[in-house]
Image 1: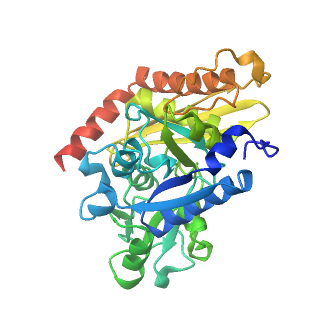
Image 2: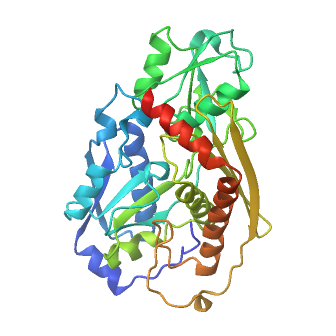
Length: 361
């Protein structure tokens, strides 16, 4: 968390005690676990406030026979939740940050980014292949993934394997793996498996050298109405500074590339000794063509009062008044600079071809 553990009871908190805070979430088991986690954290800061969780289905939950990259909708897992937020039917929404576009609809902002779980990908093997790795799977084994990013990177590293789309929530995908003979393994986010308590199913963790992760993967974002100051203040205590700055850099990189789930784009960030390191890459759909670079920037942490006006300017869709503005700008500029470097070296051509090929599939 952001180190605001000593939050005093304020008039604002007393006002919040007079109302029930409604929290929107998707209906899947993982989404409910993530939302319960966020509500539990809020209750530690605001023990007297009442929360009600409201679950709903999204477009991405309903369309299960089409690859995500083919649906062409940027807000697959967020639109219905944002509709409820805009209609004041809920006060905040908990998302997997990687599901949130880098440009949010007008009137919304990400009011908190919680401490990140391991952002890497994991391999879950069919029971008959437990103990294997991707490298040791038999020739032409089929590996399931819903992500162009994973497929492009892994096809390049493991040309003896075949990669095929698999859809559904975590429970559905694991059932397809275990009960059908179609897949030898599937690729899932480590964070989701850990949050579900399924650590024992992780057969192999793919480190960034093998497979860089999606922008924002492993982090939870709390979306609110941009002008609802009471709720913005309520959730801002959940901001984790390191996760926030890493994710600002990642989202700025993706936004400047104009990437999305229809093209293979991946990142890796590290914060060490006041330096933020960002590695970003783009791939062709089959992984045969790729480009990646690393840049770094110094993250200064000035005192809060040095930060200038408190007009809540958003940074790649995120509002974080309690994190130094200069540090946020440095992270954003790092993402933009790295994207510009790749674009100047020809990344746009790789991405354009990937988009065209994906559209033609």
